[in-house]
Length: 300
Ligand SMILES: NC(=O)c1ccc[n+]([C@@H]2O[C@H](COP(=O)([O-])OP(=O)(O)OC[C@H]3O[C@@H](n4cnc5c(N)ncnc54)[C@H](OP(=O)(O)O)[C@@H]3O)[C@@H](O)[C@H]2O)c1
Image (cartoon, rainbow, N blue to C red):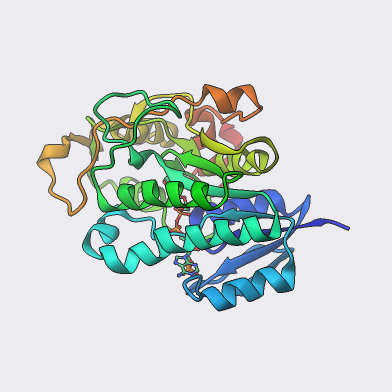
């Protein structure tokens, strides 16, 4: 019989990818709240994670062998505007999940973020000092600490910017950007904001690997330091679209509720040595464009 994996955020962008990649090896239980889990072979559980009694019941009923906690308010601007509402989900819920994983003695993986850093002294290793500059980053840093306090066995996986394919689950900036470009309209992308992005399939596989390999903090960044503007240029090249439709813009040119760090590139060599092997960005985009039917398979 397959072991049982509880995945929160299963209706979201990353959670969808984790469910898809886990379903052959695990009996997956996917938690959703306002949206649905849209993956075959996954048992869907509708639950507002804020409800601790119900969350505990889910653990008691299912008795998972492992947990990946990927649910969150994932949009920094929303967190900045709604710090109290989002703190419940982004700090209290992870802390409770770590406590339950400790009680049930099962591996726990948490999806933190590169936004725990201020972006002023890149690249960042696991030992680098955190110094978030937005509410979302503060919440992630607080969640990391709370989880490790309650359950030091937790694998805290700091995720970079992710891009990828889902069948409509969650929020990813790519499909909208691609549609706009295909309509021949201009888009503006930051040329002075650097990350080490990774495709969501590589990220999902990495998180599943970390279930058995890691306790404490680990970085799951991609291998390439790149700006969003340069990512857009890759997409335009693959789609054979006029690259001048993409206009470079500076962070200072656009005002947003949440401050944006200039460069939160991650050093992820620790993860690479234990088998995390993210795809090259261009190859990943090509695959995503084909799966999303933006590109014909013959060009592969
Ligand atoms: N996307 C990125 O580039 C990125 C980068 C770094 C880190 N991360 C982290 O990676 C994780 C996944 O991000 P994502 O992009 O997949 O986010 P997403 O697409 O916005 O999905 C968020 C998920 O959280 C669930 N959720 C939110 N509040 C909930 C609640 N009260 N009870 C139950 N479920 C709740 C949502 O469920 P419903 O939709 O059903 O309500 C959804 O499944 C998050 O921890 C995020 O902070 C993401």
